[in-house]
Image (cartoon, rainbow, N blue to C red; front, side, top):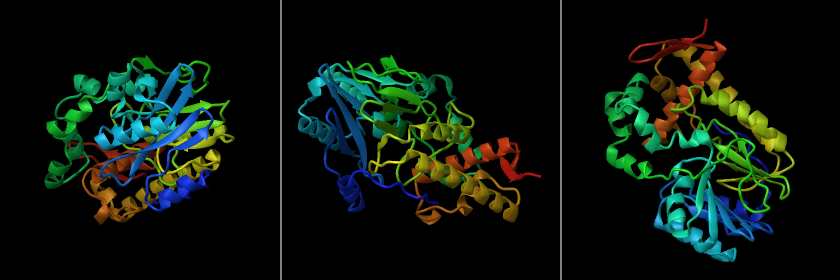
Length: 349
């Protein structure tokens, strides 16, 4: 399912996205730069890293995936902005997904920079979750969602696959809602927007007139809102966060993917409508097919690429997204859970 895209505010960035090219490094404001860094083997293609510059040094927002080509692009972007790795004094991560937080540790190691994130985000770092989450959690979740055993074996995370994510860095600074990023006279302020992850933050700067949205609001696609440890109703959290962020409509939106745009209030309405339509579609599937597992529902939903082209970890994300919608609908009373080792769902009475 797609949403109505936002109007771009950066023509060159938008044109490069349409051509499936890496956009250029751009000076967004006199002291703020956008640096696209590649995500290897990923349909999103790149993360847009932001460099906030002051007399005290550079703060990097979302440095990108842990890959050599990503690091090289970041270093090159710093050079265009007239800086180097040694000038970096801080790293802010909007959330801990590896295409945002992957290079934070290397930046800290090579520059001495601090790393900042929201307190709730620290708690869902893989190294923290491992302390409290049973080893069987992943397989239990796939089984309870009705994923067939032969498919679940391909979708479960092996220790080798998880290892790089276990090494994602812990923060030195915690940014709660409303906190100002420590960066001289600069005025970026954290806005807590849970949903995509429990501790996702946007960064608002009233002086520069910009809103850095990470993955919370993107111009064309809806970020994955899936069931996760740390939030048992992420879709409710996400919709509330969308409603909150709409108040920043006068700011230019600087997302972490795709391209810059104006009109965040209009875009948030489109995203809320998208999720309402998804809930309606789930209700239709349950009415047509009766009691179903999350996997059986997911197979019958509309996917922009077509279900047959949703493969590998993307299938896992799709099931998690369906589960998040079901949990939200259960709270509203539009579906009922039949609990058990394999959970089944039916339309509400």
